[in-house]
Length: 212
Image 1: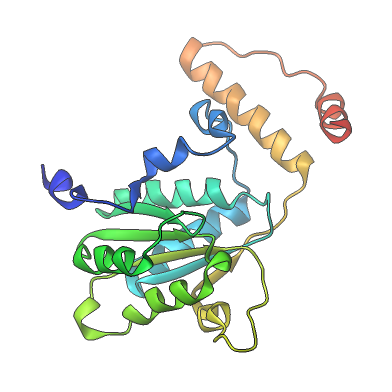
Image 2 (image 1 turned 60 degrees about the vertical axis):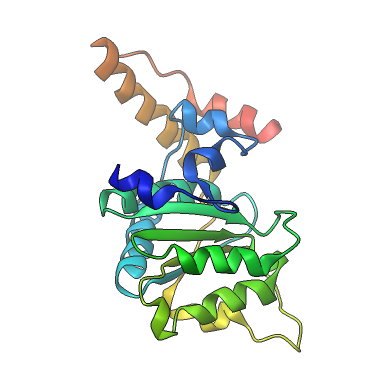
């Protein structure tokens, strides 16, 4: 009940579970095929701390570096801290972003708002950021997610402003990811069924992945 009171009503922001269903590779999450390197795990912890202490954080990276999967893992971590994550993408076809900002401002306490793809609508993202330093929004927490981009000369550089609270995604090797996923799922299989399954030739799997 405590959580449901904070969740509703929502018009523009969606719970993380709904966001997962919009991903083209949602089966990876549902089948527990995600794997994070040691650095990625550390980066996720740092972003969670930024959200707790500074109420702002930014996840920056090139396409296909795992930003969406990291957002989901961050969401899991902040739920453990008693916070509720909500998500919106700047890809949204919302006509009136002012109503989005109003909704965000009305529902601050105990929530973390994840604003994805800020490179697509830099001016709105900056408006949202500007709320963080205003006294009446002292409970507002926002995670900005962006690709690398160069703002127009006429625009203030939000990425530069967010630098103290920014983590840049590494581009881990395919080999490291596949190796981690296979070994992680081998352990999961043993937990569920009480026996190991034989791991095949990882070099062969990786070679096929490169060809694909």
